[in-house]
Image (cartoon, rainbow, N blue to C red):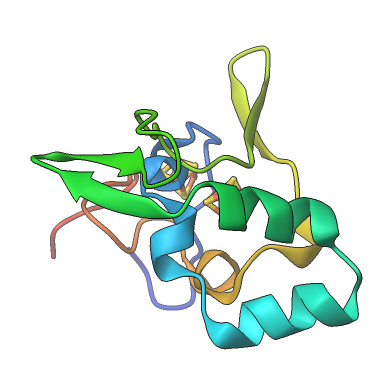
Length: 107
Ligand code: SF4
Ligand code: SF4
């Protein structure tokens, strides 16, 4: 890739399958409190993830957690239901920066 060239997100949703709550920071939680986003805080409180072997389950009710609870779809394109206030880890994630992204290219 040429210097300065950016990679376009294909909206495949793969990066959003990594569980959001595991990477949410106190700074995100504080911001959502300030913004009055009790909808987000409620889901995070409900879905406290714990490892059960090789997958995550909810500590509250043992439900199998499959990806970020805010991942939405429009036809085959991934959408973030809380895009305007998504956590820092999501804002800073660059398409192609990780092997989990199909746009990743080894140097
Ligand atoms: S908060 Fe949005 S951008 Fe972040 S992992 Fe969830 S769906 Fe993806
Ligand atoms: S894995 Fe890459 S292409 Fe897929 S949604 Fe995430 S950033 Fe976009």
